[in-house]
Image 1 (tube, rainbow, N blue to C red):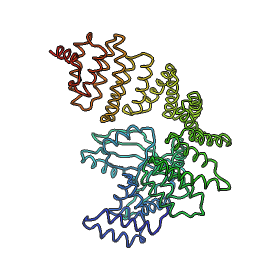
Image 2 (image 1 turned 90 degrees about the horizontal axis):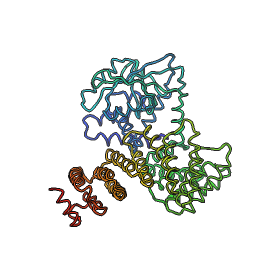
Image 3 (image 1 turned 90 degrees about the vertical axis):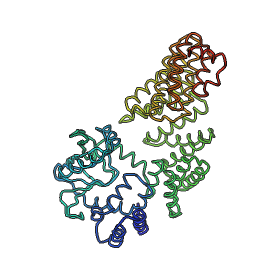
Length: 565
């Protein structure tokens, strides 16, 4: 992002605003402002003052407003690290000691073998004992675990990196200390416990040839492409779901843009349209998309890739507005351009296939929807490395179409495959597993396998209770599923379904107190009434948790009272 006098003034104003009332701090801020140009960013960063903590706190918390206001120093420090970088001539091991919360440490353990990035500037040392002292002292806080990172750097596989020596640059005359820039990416190795609440974590600086890093870098590049740093920031905010902040940044850029730079203006209008679309302001989104369309059509060498993305986005707005024929028109325009390109861009083509499948599903043209979902699946199956979660979603979409076409056996087979993939690649409380179990429940219900259907609803309820216990509307929907399933079970004189469904039903309470009260009550009633309940009685019993026993008919009340004795 461009650095100017305005950015510098915003930095100093932010420093004053966030340090009001702190003894002696205003004097240091005054020095920082008056003499900033006399020292390097590293000198100021390593000085024992507020700057180090302030900058890393802003980056660690991903406070976008604060990042914008401190961008002058962040970029200045980053650029100095780039200038000072020298590739090591031999293998190098650096150390860092710090505290980590229990939650953050558990997340780190799950990343073993994967990629890990620090959001902030990372100070390290060649002296393990120094780092160990910091890690041990962190344990004095009962909320933290002491961590000592071993960072291994191999110059053979390393072509470029973003770290630099603090020798001759630090406020203090230190030796053998290095500073990594923010977002440097490491691969997590062994994680070993040294003592109670003290762990050693092996990290290696990733090679430029690392396949996972290449894929991650390409994804980031695509998510943040733009001709200026500010527009890249705007797109990153959009990707992060920070729509109001993205709109603020993009509006500043639009106001400052030259009307002669049509390509940049078109890019900004497109991003603003995406912001409005994500905020569900569809009419305003269309205003920006129309501006982009007019600009692209006026350019002599219009970028067809930009046009296909724009057509897909316009189609999505019409989809949300339920103007399906219009949505289909724009999706087909995108596909026409993409299929003529050489070579084919499969990463963009798969999006259009998915959009067309979705619109045909809304139009209830299930055979066409199935055709495009199958094309989408074929691309995901051939991509390397395989993205198993996208593959699962693709299978799920196809299964849904089979379900709508009443081809329940085909749907069941695919829903089982989706669940297997998600169980292998997701944490056990991920809500995607809830969707998978509910999908299996509904298709098993259609096939008449009521007991197995109820078991899947029970799994769904259990996961949902762990991950989002306050979702009352989902609870009520789940209860209705149980009522319907138990009705069918009762009509076939299958008591186990009745008992199990009651359990599921009562695992989805409005409150814990309701669950404990109703679970005990329901079990006693079921035990006494297993051979005396009618379907109508059962449905009223199920209402106990929602409406209370006072709403029951007199005949069922008398039965309950009789069994309660």
